[in-house]
Length: 93
Image 1 (cartoon, rainbow, N blue to C red):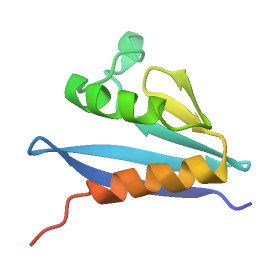
Image 2 (image 1 turned 60 degrees about the vertical axis):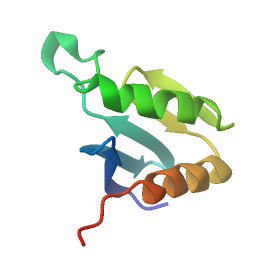
Image 3 (image 1 turned 90 degrees about the horizontal axis):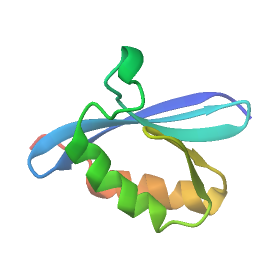
Image 4 (image 1 turned 180 degrees about the vertical axis):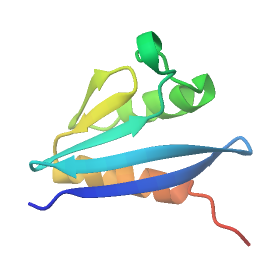
């Protein structure tokens, strides 16, 4: 399987947040920005984490591996995550 990187700019309550979907070595992960440095376990934007975490928790085949990172373990889960992000993706009019 080839490595892949996709970014989604998602509109959450009128604010845009970036989600990164990365595939490498056949494994896919969804990530959000963290606060960086020694605070890498803290999401940079609390609103973004509070929006995505409960939605991902409802999808079978996803394992949270870090506060800001989820392992998408099945093709079905990946399809649902992509649909969720595309549904809320920002589009200029």
